[in-house]
Image: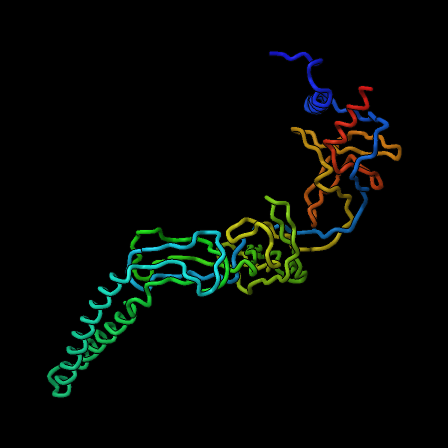
Length: 345
């Protein structure tokens, strides 16, 4: 069904017309209007930027601890889940102390048997009726039984699981009602104030990157860039991949950054003068990339541009389409609507 344009609100009609022109590839090179100046704009100019060597990286926690079950027992209570903040010593979950008590009793019985066997073998060895190897075997069985009693857990005291550090729960490895076997991971907690990214550096770049010692970290999903507080390149190289591991330490409490996230490390390898624009100034419609160039009289011209890669700081390099000293709009959608509004009068 086609709606006559006379029934459309004027503002909506103008917006649709502007978008249709751009999508169709009809992009006038010099349409101008005497409009009010946009609320935000920026002057495009050459500036000194860091030349970066980009490497894919992964976020990890510097301080992270996983609590494992010290007894075999069923999970009776769970108080936390992934994403929750906890304090050191805070109760996280409870295990069934009755099953722990049964395990402890069995371990105590085994210890008593091993202790008696060791005493008998020791007496027989003194009388030269058994070999030294038999005595060593009995002693080993006795020590193993002692270890089993210690691991079986002093009963009820190991029926509770507490936070080993203050931080955020990264993962809960067990559910309510499940059986926790001895040594099974239960809860992983990390400190959000202490994060870093791990990247692999090719061997042929190591000398250059070690000399620089500076890097920035980009989080592509959010567009966030941060300076690495410290860059640490490990002294060994993997024999199969011929790469070395680099650790880039991050500032505290970066919003939305958690262990396991992907990131991009940009190692500084020099400086250069480049023409750049903020990403907010760029309008993309299909294969068309353009900006609105403003003049001193309040006019605007839609101009197609060719962009390079993002430079340090998140701005985009301009390869063609805009000259140094020209002013561009930081609100291209609003500028486009104003352009059509004034053109219709």
